[in-house]
Amino acid sequence: MLKGTYPLDRFQGLQTPFYYYDTQLLQLTLDAIRDEVKDRPQWQVHYAVKANHNPVLLKQIVAAGLGADCVSGGEVKAALEAGFPPQSIVYAGVGKADWEILLALDAGIGRFNVESSAELQVIASLAASKGLVAPVSLRVNPDIGAHTLAGITTGLAENKFGIYHGMVEEVAREALALSSVRFCGLHFHIGSQILEMPDFAALCNRINDLTDRLERAGIPIADVNVGGGLGIEYGHPNHLPMANFKAYFSTYKRLLPASRPVHFELGRSIVAPCGTLITRVLYVKEGLARRFAIVDAGMNDLIRPALYHASHRIENLSSNGPELPYDVVGPCCESSDVFGKDILLEECHRGDFIAIRSAGAYGESMASQYNCRPLAPAVFSE
Ligand SMILES: *Cc1c(COP(=O)(O)O)cnc(C)c1O
Image 1 (tube, rainbow, N blue to C red):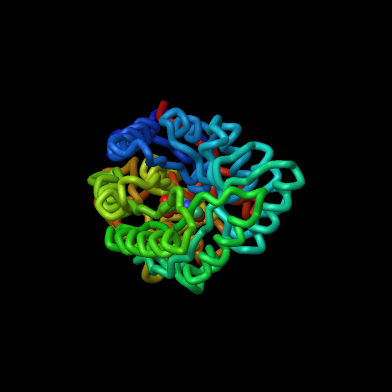
Image 2 (cartoon, rainbow, N blue to C red):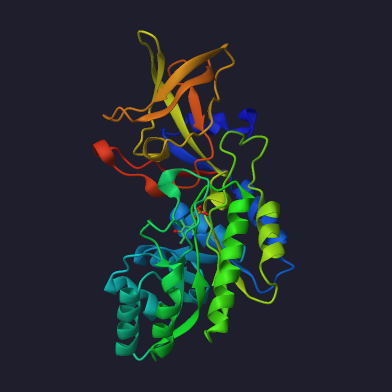
């Protein structure tokens, strides 16, 4: 949203901070994804619920026909409550507890993405105890380093995620021998905020090598799930408000065989651009060498800058004064409660509305009540 398009009159009556969601932009994003995959009826796009589990957004995403990708029993529950068909739900995670597995079995979800042989055995025995057959894929650690922040790469051999690619054949044979599981295929996810298409191309090549190797060994691969990870342009929310879905999906169209069904799990690229954290300036403080804009949102509302050194574009929506450099900081009692250093903002005054952009993913869903601060509510454009 351009600076002039935020409804400041409406904001005047609201307590800050809050998340403001542009549901029109979300709809345009969902439409763009549908257009990119409409020539591949065997492909299914799932939404990664962990990026944002706000029920209003989930319902809009269900209505667009996406499935859900969950990483906990709570997320499976949230997806079911929002109306995702159970068959459209896939469930990954290295540490699935028994109650979470049972909940997913009872719901009849579409797929368990299994991350170890030990987990496979537990799913098999819980399914057997209920007289059910659990549909499983094996999550493979493809040992591919994505060009992204170290904290959010997941596909390297030393990450905790998945089964090392050299050991997948053995675990697949185990799965095939279990009568209470149905082995369906392979699952991958190499990281998040990936803007380099060659990273996804490398994943495709790894997938093709592995599926060829397994099929030659007599292990049928019905489908593959390539995970998510497509990044967005945090620095340019106005010029590039949507992720490059064309480049992303065309990479997979070019490199994966058209005959095999493919699942995708996109989180950030679907919801990040539509969300803005709206906060107000409490105080402007002149330091020795720095000028601080102290705002009423903190790291408990949006932890990405403190956790990953992530940067979000910050704008002053209220001022047309000359631009000055500010350190934009929150009120939490942590030195890392900083949204940005040396950020050029139009001159700040107490009460100005500050927009922290592209905060729709891993914002509200990672919020906490640290310092006994209340959770920031959500406000929608319509
Ligand atoms: C987090 C996650 C995703 C979504 O990642 P994005 O970078 O938000 O697209 C997809 N699949 C799995 C297994 C995940 O853990």
